[in-house]
Amino acid sequence: MAIIKFELGSDISTFECLNDNLIFLSTKQNSVQLLSALDFTTLQNITHQHIDQDAKLFTTSIDAKLLAFANNKKVYILSTQNLKILNSVEIGEDILGISFNNSSTYIFVTLSNGEILQYRYNARTLLSRYCTYSKINHLSINSTKLLSVGKNISLFDTFTHQKSNIVIDSKSSISYGLFLDQDSICLGDNSGYLYFFSLKNHKITKKISTQFKKITQILKMQNSRYIMVAGDDDFTILIDTKVQKIISYKYLQFEKKILSIQKFEINKLIVLFDNNIAKIVELSNPTELQFLIYENKIEEAYKFVEKNVMLEDTLEHKMLEQIYKSAYREATLSLINKNRFLARKMLENFLNIKSKKDEIDKLFKAYENYEYLKELYHDKKISLCYALIDKYPPLKMTSQYKRLEERYKQALLNAQFYISSKKLEEAKEVLQDYLIINSKRNVVKMLLNSNRLKGVNSIDNFNILNKTISKLDISMLKLHKAYSSGNFKLCYEILDSNKNLHDLELSTILTKHYNNMIYRCDEYALKGDIQNLKKELGDFIHISTRRDKIGSLLRVAFHVKIKQLISYKTIKQAENMIYSYLDIFGIDSEIVVIMKKYELFTNSKLAISEEQNTQKFKDFWYFSGYFT
Image (cartoon, rainbow, N blue to C red; front, side, top):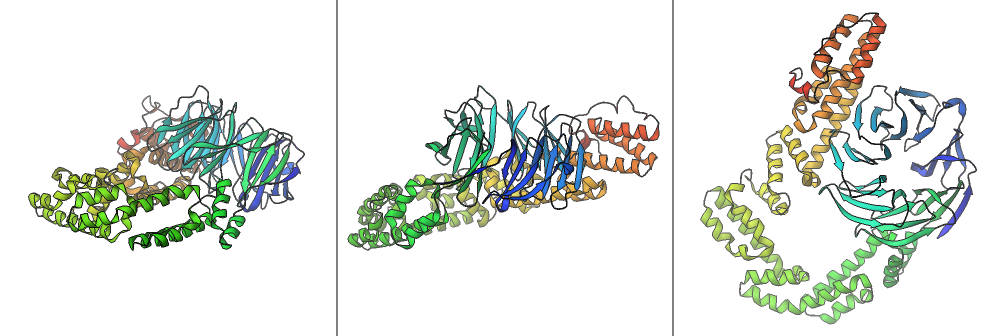
C-alpha cells in the first residue's frame, strides 16, 4: 500500500475531490484553491477580492466550474472561469450548509431551523422548501432524492415532494447518511453505530457497532459493494454491504486523527488529517490481477482477489469469473456425456479455490443422479423430475430440463387460450400436473383464479405475470393496464403506492418522462410563465400523490409573475394577481414578502380580507378550481 504525503499548511474548512482529479480546498482564512489530486500543485487560487469577507461555508460543482459560498444570511454563486458572481440569494435565516446536486443545476441550502431550501444555481426565486423539524447534521443528495439526518431522519423526493420519515432505534442523533443505491441507505450515529436501512421495506436490515465514539464519514468505495467508515480516530473500517458485516476492522490506520477521506482514480484515496497534512493512499491495483490472468495463473489470481477484496466485481475479476464459468460449462457437458475424468480436468485450476469448492462439489454430486433423471423423464414423472432438479440445480443444464420447461410454457399458453374462451375446466386439466410442483404452484394457482385475471388479456401480459408473480402480481398488472390504456395519472399513483414496482423497466421509463417534464416546468415557473406551465403539466396536475410538487411549481410561477408585474410598473395587474393568489393558495411567507414589496413600491395598502389572510391546507389550490 503506497503512501505519498503532502503538507497543506492552513486550517482547512472544506476538502472535496472532484471530477478530473481535482481537489477543492477552502480554509478558515477564506482562501479557495483548486489543486491537482495527483501531486497537489495549485491550479487556481481564488482570492479575497472575489469572495465575501464574512463567508463561512464553501462548496463547488463536481466539474469545478461553479463556486458557492455563504455567510450567515446570503448565498453567492461564482463562476470559477471568469470569477464573476452569477447569482446571489438573500436567505433571511441562519445558514448551516450549502450543497450542489449531482448535475449542479440546483443548490440546496440547509438552515438552522431544520429547513432545506432549493434554488436553481442561476435564479433567486425559491423553488422548494423541505421541512425536517430538527437540526441537520448531514445532507446527502442523489439524482432525485435528499437524505437529511440529525435527531430526525427525513427522505425527500425532489421531483414529487414525497417525504418519508425514517425511524431507527438510536439513542443519539445521526451524524452521517449515505445512499448505497436506489433502495437502501446507510446511517452512522454519534455513538458509533452503523445502520443499514431498506427503503423498499422501510426497516433496518442490520445494526453494527463500529467501536467509534462517533461516525464522521461513510465513503462508497470504487468497488461499490464496499463502504469505508471513518470516525473520530486514526483508523477506518471496511464493510461489505452485500453481507452487511465488517470484513476489515482496521483497514487503514494512521498516526493522526482523520478529518476527511476522498477517492480518485481507480484505486487511490486522499486522506486529510487534523494537522492539515494530506496523504495519497494507493490501494491494490487491478493491473496486478490482469497480469496473473494473462499468465494463466488462475489459482494465484483468485488468491490475490481473496487478499484484496476490493478487486471483487472489477472488470479484471469479471474476466476471471468468465474463465471459471466457461470451464464450469465445459465440465458440465463432459458430465452429461459421462466423462467424469475430463470434467475434473476442465476444473483442475479451480479445485483448490475456497470460493469455488462447494459449487464444484455440488456439480459432481448432481450428475451422480443424472441417470435417475433420465429414467423419470422417460416414465413422464414430471413432478419427480422437478423435485430432483430443485434438489440438484446443476441438472438444469440438461436437455431433459429444457424440454420440461418448453412443455410447461406450452401448457401455460394452452391454459391461457382456454381461459380466454371461458373454458376453465379444460385449463385446469392442462395445468393439473404443475399444481403439485413447488416452483410452479403459485403461477398456476394465480392463472386459474378467475377473479384475479382482470387486465390479463394477452400472452405478453401473462408472461409479465409469470416472471414476477411472487412479488408484484396484481399491482404490476394494474400498472401495465393503466399504461396500455394511456391512463398516466393512474400509472404514477400506482407507482407511488407500490415501492416494489420501481425496479420495472416501465417504471424507469415513466419516472424519466416525469422528471424531464418537471425540469421543463421548473424553467417555466422561474420565468413566471403560468400558461405554458399549465400546458406542460397537463393531466399531471391531477396526480393526487404528487400535488405537493405541482402546487409548489404553480406558487413559484405566481411569485415570479407578480414580481415581474411590479417591476414593470403594471400595478393594477400585480394587485389583482396578489388577490388571486390569496384566493387560490392562501397566505404564506413568500407572498407576504412580495406584498410588502408591493406596498412599499406603491405606497399603498392592499385590501386583504380576513379569509384571504389565512393559511390554507396544502391541496387547497387544487380544489379552488382555478387549475382544474
